[in-house]
Image (cartoon, rainbow, N blue to C red; front, top):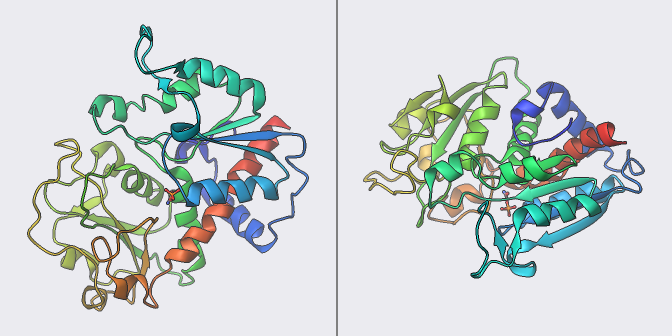
Length: 317
Ligand code: CP
């Protein structure tokens, strides 16, 4: 694997899931593989799970880990090409990446959607600079439109929790939130589910349809109760409007998942990438209930990252 920014970088998803599950059985099985190599984990945005799971994964492979919380600890970055830097920005992103090239064998970066300019976000204005200027493999730790390490962990978690021969019914449901949230997790989950042997649908209120470039032919139902019927897995996530970019059109019905809604499903397992706003996005009773596999999902972030770093080390070793 030469880079990891979306599902299209994975040659065989089932093999990748199998590899991650083998790593989970024996996390130190390749503890020398990254010896003498360095991964830079660059965070332009906040993180708990991605930061720590990536660090554990890299350490399990024997990699040296440099973590840069760029928003807090680095110089104020300039992203615009050709800009006259006579304002607040101190270092241009392309200089920062050239320097990271000198220190790192893999560069992993978190760069959320700016949520100000739709075209900048859709075209991944920051990740694309890393892809352009990095001379070493680039890994996305969540970008403007995708969260591939999360999605791989989600695929691992679904695989662990599904032993029947038939395809599971998986529902991605929109949930309420207090502020505009990017579509990256919803987009990414949608993209990865289309590569899995599952029956996948999305439910969200009118005005909240995800980008057609991600949903493609996936069925979108605007009635949550109808969508949840007989579900085997429910993936809960908020996102703001894509069409009216970052808007939060008013929603009259209550979309927060409760035990009553869950009772209409096939005892569905409940997933969420975290962090979650309790009793806004997801009720306490569901979050803490026996159907929740959310912490298992968070644990699998380690094995998702480790499988990806291991594949990349195959290429650079
Ligand atoms: N799910 C996830 O990516 O969590 P963090 O934002 O805490 O890394």
